[in-house]
Length: 427
Ligand code: GDP
Image: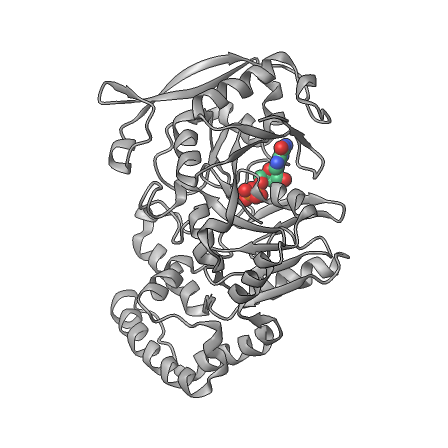
């Protein structure tokens, strides 16, 4: 059986925690898109970890972690990450890397930096991990596939060809040092040495695993609103963040994905630029940022303070729909326990009309939030394990949100740890 764990919002919903928790019952965890540009924070028996490339199931010794073909594979980051968890006492994880995955090269990272410099104030808020240049090259058909590392002649020709193309831009657009084919080859050979023991046809492996009835989790990065097709284009990421893409980025039949666990946060946060309708500012935002997540809402990869907002039912309803949510995991609810009253964005006012449908970006930029305020519960709900034991106002908040988004909230996360979870049976 294959289940996907994906984000309903702008990312940072707590997918890592839900994956780590569900990985207990899983055999295989697959990353199917994205790269080292975002991160998951995981708190478990070994401590607190920030992962960027490894799937969040690496902490169990019964699981196999797969870097699927859809991922932007940064080999040095992957190896640094494996080393860093092993150094902290985690058993060496079993990892497989798709022979069809493509690699982030050092020039992708440089191009990302150069482009941000060129755009200056008009930048897209890139994390400068090379992700946009990487995916551009993938679709321009000038990317390097892992399988190509093992064909020396092909590699040489391609390195020369790529330098030719890249050097035109480096010279005339960015005015930066040019690439040399021999440096590229050296980099590629280093990657070959590092990755060789892990490479296989992961889609064939997964096909056999599906047939054998293994429990497989697809782990998404970021969330619906950062999807290049359905998100807030152009302030989006460069690979699809949707569960549907899990089939492609892992190489499995789409009909095998049975559950789409869509992680939805009890308030909003976002990194990077772009319209953010329920955004709050000043002291109100600072307080939520300080109390948010597990130790504040700051980017795992970049350390950037996240933009904060109230729960956005319009964006979340859309985010769940576009994912095809079968289950909603409602997270970081414990953080809201300090508030007397909790505003929720229930509609967008655009050109004088109120809508609950999430619009395309040009309209979104004109949207003003329509808020409804619910009473807070004013206590700490961490440690509660049964839904009925939650304070009445807290249950009312959950049920209000569930009604507004129109998808069943089957799990409630009330703390960062593996056991901080409340299942709603019968949902
Ligand atoms: P991801 O990229 O979706 O995995 O999100 P992050 O790694 O940014 O996770 C959000 C943060 O919230 C992390 O620091 C988690 O440890 C933390 N977290 C996850 N679930 C909960 C929760 O229910 N309550 C609290 N307080 N923190 C949580």
